[in-house]
Image 1 (cartoon, rainbow, N blue to C red):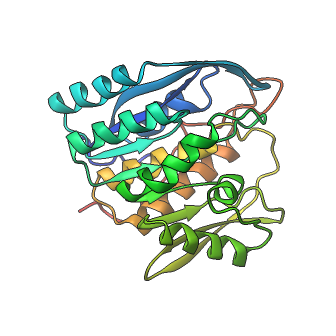
Image 2: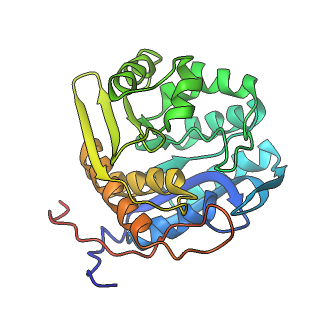
Image 3: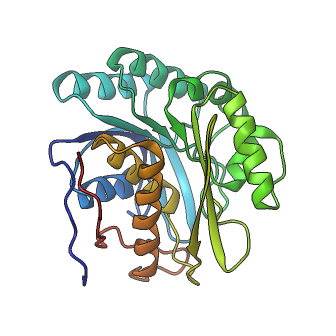
Length: 277
């Protein structure tokens, strides 16, 4: 690793509520690697156990919603998180359990990555759960980080351009979420455009596209990186900027594992220019 990693505020703690990925490239495994690589402390509440590898998902075993609630509250009562990252929530019972647990722990910095479809195409959430997520959960989080297919599902709107991305982000704001970061990797082009929107601001982050099939876990990684920067006291927009930079470097230095969509390099180093206050 050529660049020195500037550690973040070492006492910051991030609680991850997400599914497990047996291949290690996405889900709770990618989240833990990301939070740890960026210098913070990772805690977890596992919502499901998936059997998968780089070529796709074989099966999903749900965790009892009551035990998801217990994981969140019991851990947080002992070690209070500075931020929460939420990933795979596959049913209404799980979402209700998570909402109940969030009401208990009362953490402000909550990042929701609305995981709906795996990289290989397997659907990871049912329609009732999507409706509950839209009507209730997104009003309780600080920000939501959908990719283009997820943003299309949440708003019933097709996205073909950057302007469409902004329009859809504004629709999500109208549903009650405060901040939206739509990931633009699914649109073709030399650059990837990730777009941040809130009621007062629109910011387009441009990253040169890396030609690689190894992008498994990029969404999980980005949302965890954003949550980590938030946990250290960074503003939302700056957290998005730094999270995108971290993921871009992780894609560039991927280890090229597996026969399908391989993982990115969570142990990549990055320079953080501004001192954390």
